[in-house]
Length: 409
Image (cartoon, rainbow, N blue to C red; front, top):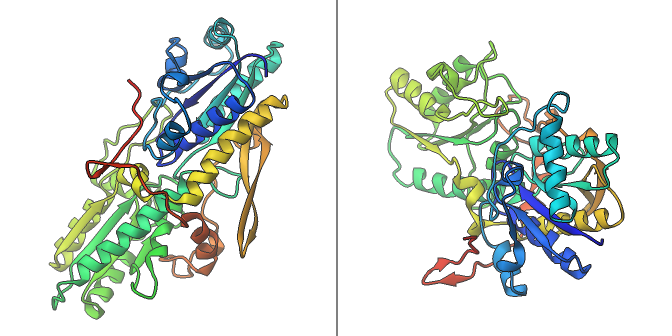
């Protein structure tokens, strides 16, 4: 690779997205790439020519390791939707103008569904206009809903945090031993796919009874059946903990959170900004049963907990970044690196470069065969799939009792 490269981050951050940037950077340096630029706030910042030189922040292997342990998006993220090519050629020409200005040969974009759409449109424009620049997708999403790839970097660490926190919540809720149980509703991210909420199933083990029910967006949410379930649990248990996805919908297609609040805001991609599902359900339970309730919303905690990151996840996030660089160096473009599981006992996983057109804007749900017959739980098929992804830990670099992070100034 004779020119420079640029790497950007987009969408919701994860605990390991910076490990992918570290992977791109490290592989580029080994191949002798002159400059590795970072987009400041994704493609939105790139269109404004806001770049940084990663050499200004990474001065050796110690900083690479620190970057791998840093949560959120080190380069800054965005939720900017590239317009359709037709009628907006000036926007696309601006991208290539900036790439030419900085002698950028390849652009790497770390993100999920919408980010892969950006890679697709840029690579399509380049192909249609005989542009030499290349574009590669680096997968990232705690939602784990990208197709083709076995799983997505970011998911394993979020699942590890969710299962750990659920286990601790169960322990806390069980401690009082009251005659009437506290009903604890835990809201977990997931708009249309329930992968994150499914991770609550991993809390169950020899020292933990596990959650009492799990509700995913893949199944229609029936309020009456839910209330009957809660009443039955309250009669038979001294502690009740239920995990629910923020994206559960009732039969008419509305999200449960919309039942409580019709004015749900949307982002640039038309995605509804959801929150309040657990609070609404807790209020309904209290009103109908008189039981004590508690609503817990993990919100951004589940994607920011690098101190609870999975070592498997960190290593794979680093690998997809490095392999994206290698694929681009081989002349590939318009592709995303996928994780390909080769075995479960022991767990083995490799990578491939796959056509971005089969990935962009496609959401993969939790397989129906992994959801229990009553629609309120996950079976062993899910656990066999997910358990290897949460294995291992990477100790934070502690300073004054707290984790140290690499900060872009």
